[in-house]
Amino acid sequence: MSKPRLTPQEIALALADSLLRFSAQSTQGIGKVLLPRESLLKRVFSSHRRNAERLEALKLNCDIVIPHLALTEYRLENGDYWNRDNSDINGFVRQLSFQSITQVFESAGCRMVNANEFVRERAERFSAYAATTPLQNIAEEVVKDHDPPSKLSVTELLNFLGPTRISTYKQLWAQNEERITQLQRSSIGDLLSEVYRHWRGKAPLRDMDVIRFNGST
Image (cartoon, rainbow, N blue to C red; front, side):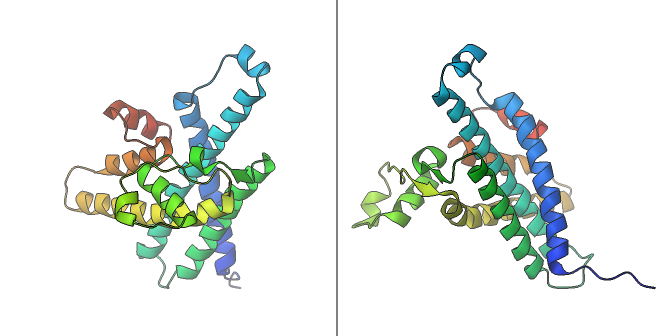
């Protein structure tokens, strides 16, 4: 008797669960190495410091889930082990992953976040500002520094940042795959640097930052 075939929703649930678990492990590893942590005495007597550390950890997890989601989608789109169009599974995986990120923020009491602190990369900051503020002259505005909204829901942020980041990460991963196929040096560092830049708001200052970042993922 043949086993019942899994539905696209069931497959997506299993994939989302796997990538979220792996992302959580990566977040923990990177956090131990790269996240700043105040002394115990300062943390005990300052709720502001504790809240800042908590938000930083939540942001890091979000910034790690998105590239893992991108690679999952890429494999579904380009893998030859399933003879079907997996766009429906990809849609479910993305929906479940974004929902999970939102739920984590909400469980920590952070349904709304300060986008000015959360969005750090310059181009993303301008895009967030432009999406919420009428612009008179885009050519003039694009060269200025702008502060994104002080309050934005996590859902809005994910819907805004997620698709663009995922597309970028897929392109960088595809370039890396092509280089490996041609027996050229891997360009995985470009992808890691882009993830790091979205997280910190600037490119890593030295290769060691990328190595430490990669070693914890």
